Image (cartoon, rainbow, N blue to C red; front, top):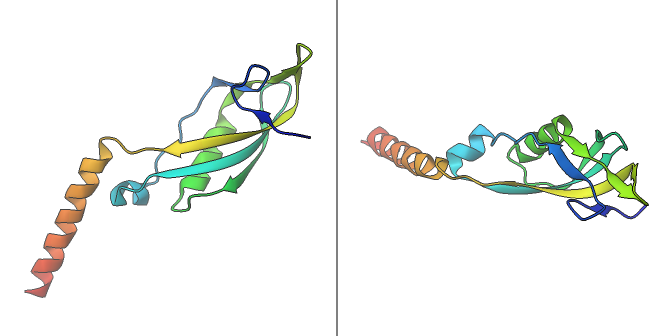
Length: 118
């Protein structure tokens, strides 16, 4: 079975999307990530199988899987009828306000290391 494209005209789409949480360690380090998942979505719009194809490590993979499993979908269609399908879904983790926080965290750690050497 050839995978459907997510959000294509006949492919599956989000109905109710759960946003993944950014792992704490990644946030503190200012790390962003991209995870590719293969998702099997049934004709009722449920994610039955979620498999990481290309992970990012640092806790991103697990958070992406949790968010995709807790989301609901509008299923793919073939000849106007809902069908079970496999789709490739990228999940991107982007830091916004946390970047400033992580840089200040790094300065604080560096200052503490400097004080420890004195």
